[in-house]
Every structure is written in structure tokens, then in C-alpha cells.
Image (cartoon, rainbow, N blue to C red):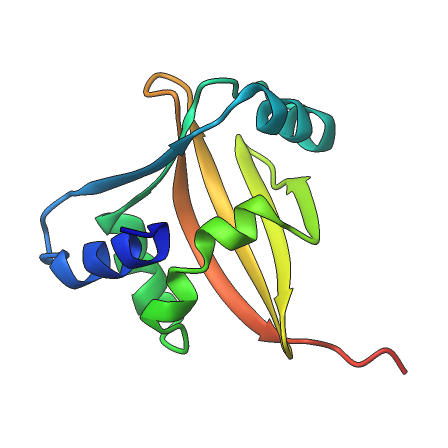
Length: 129
């Protein structure tokens, strides 16, 4: 099953008040070096993940996001237009899709060795001129 479909299935199975985690993939040395260069954070062998509480936050605070938008998280992480230190042990990613710019924030959970979803939102792409 594709990662996109795994996320869609995870979103469908979320039960309010129940904490669930979907582990996406482990950060390899290449990705870790890229993150370190862009943010200064050392995250080798951490695991990207999303959890039901952050998904609830995303859906409550950003109701314009659909399940298909949330399932774009792997694409946003793998091919960001921008990656940055979002402060307070958070990594930010920005990615353009058509006329929208998606911003995804992960929280670094050092004890659990996870890069866990924090929030996701989208804005209209600004015209240059």
C-alpha cells in the first residue's frame, strides 16, 4: 500500500480522544545530512510520524485542508521548496502545489527519536508582480 493510501486510511480510522501514531519512514544518513545542513538539527535514525492529536489540531484549526492535502505530507518532506528551523525544536517545510503553498511543521521528539507532525496549513500562492 502506498504511503498516500496509508495516511488516508489512518485519517479514516482516527477516533476522537484516542491517541494513535502512524510511523512514516526512518530518516537515513542522506536525509539527516540535508536536515542538519538546513536546520542545524541532528536527526539521524529518527522516524517521521503523524499522530491523531496533531491531525485533530490540523482539522480543527485549518478546516480548508482535506484528507488528500494531509496525505501530501510525505511529498512536502521529500521535496520541499524550503526547509528551515522553525524554532523550539521544530522543523518547517514549504512546498508549492499548483496555486497553493503548503507549510508543514514537525516537532523533534528526542526521547522517542521521532519527527512528529505538529501542524499543516495552506495559503494561496502570492503573485510575483
